[in-house]
Amino acid sequence: MLKSIAAALLLLFSATLFADTLTLRENHPDRHIVVKGDTLWDISAHFLRDPWLWPDVWHINPEIENPHLIYPGDIIRLVYIDGKPTLQLDRGQRALKLSPQIRATDLGSPIPTISLEQIQHFLTRPRVISQQELDQSGYIVAGDDGRLMSGAELSIYARNIQDFDTSHFDIYHIGKAYQNPGAKRGDILGFEAIQVGDARIAQTGDPAKLYVTHSYREILVGDRLLPPHDQPIDQNFIPHAPDQNIEGMIISVLDGITKIGRYQTIVINQGFQDGIEVGHVLTAHQKGRTIRDPYAKKPGTTVTLPDEVAGTVMVFRTFQHVSYALVMDAKREIKLYDAVRTP
Image (cartoon, rainbow, N blue to C red; front, side, top):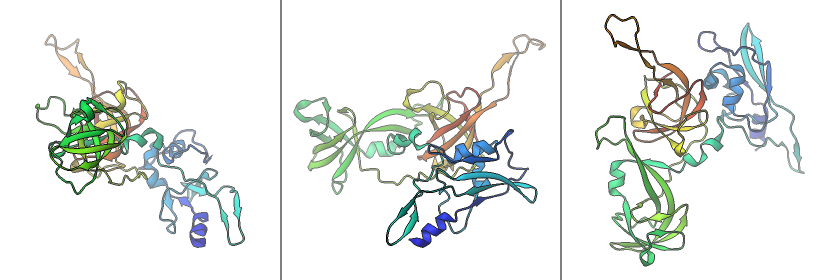
C-alpha cells in the first residue's frame, strides 16, 4: 500500500517532441493546471497541434503501470531539455488524510482520456449483432394476457431459446441494418440492437415463459432475446493511428442527429475483422464537390474537387464489421458517407 502511494507521488511524465512528427500549437502556454473535467485529449490540445499524439509526448515513469494517473491540481509544464521541448508533470498540492497507522495523499479521481459522459451509454447499449446472431436469437411471440407491449414484472413468451443453461436474457429491439451505400439488399454489415429490458426463465418449453425483471422502454412482440453481454469494455483509451491503411466511411449517426459535429457518435463501416482497434484515430474527409468546368472544350464537362480534411474521430467500440467512433474535432461540416482514413 505504502509502496504504491509512494510510487504515485513520484509520477512524472516527460517526453521529447520531435520536430518531424509533432508540432506545437501557436501561442501555446508554458504550463497548464489540471482541473476537474479536464481530459488527456483536452490538455494535449493546449500544447499540440494534433492532441491525439499525446502517448508519443508523455512518457510515463516506469514505476507506474497506469498511464492515466493525472489528477486535478497537477501542473503540466512545457520545458526545454537539450534544446528540445518536453512536457513534464509536477504533482500539485494535496489534502492529506491522517490516521494513527498511515499518512496518505488523497489523489481523488484520475482524469480520463476523453469525456466518458459523451459515450457512456454507447459502451453497453446499443450494440451491433450479426445476421448469424440474429438468426440464432430467441424472439417474443406473446405478452402476458395477450399484451402487445410488456414491461417490468410482467411475463412474456418466446421461441427459439436454444440454451436453457442460461437463465437470464437481455431483450433487444432490432433497429436499422447497417449497409454500405449501394450495397445489395442482403449485404448486411450488422444490425443495430437496442436493449429494452432483461428477463429470466420462468418455465422452459416451446414457447418458453420468461419474467421481465427490468425494462428500459416498451418491450414488443418480435423483440429478440440474447444471453447477457458480459464482454468488458476498456475505458482507458490510448489514441493511436492504425498500422495499415484504412479506407472507411461514415454510414450512420447515432441518436438521430442529422448534422455531425464535435462529440457526436458515428458508425463507420470498418470493424475488428477489418483491423480496427479501440483507440484508433482516423481523419474524416469531406467529399469534394463536383463542379462544371466553364472553360472546357466540351460543353458540360465537370471536375471533382479534392476531398478536404474535415475533422478527427476516435474509435471507442468495435464490432465485427462496424465500429462506434467519437468526433473529437470538426474543422468543417462532416456528413453521412464522408470518408474516414488513416491520418
